[in-house]
Image (cartoon, rainbow, N blue to C red):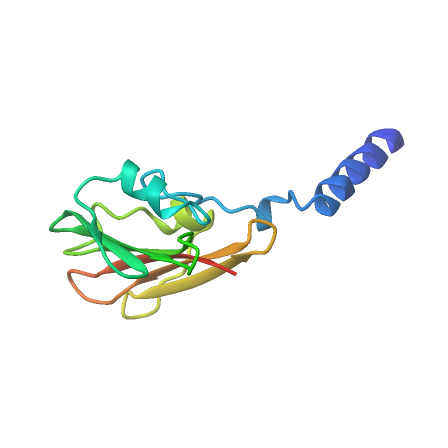
Length: 142
């Protein structure tokens, strides 16, 4: 039994040293195949109906889902912001994005931002209050 406990502690220590703990591993890693650090040309090849802009692109998947993709001066993705309108039916849950549930405020709104230094970015989940809330999910390079 003592050896088993020692082995478990050792494995946990190795995981923590390697930065592979569940608490600092992002759940939300990409959006429609687009991830932080990807080149603008790759993004534009993956996504249809993208509206190119200077330093950012915009796309609307439907009346209820749109996204903005931001680039640095080298054309690499630095941030992705996704909005879900008209209720939360199509929006992913906080658990699907952050890996944990988020306690709503009294008005029904909620917000949480998780930083993932090993992955090099943070992810936030924001839901407004009201009958038809807007959910915004943002990934941004640290």
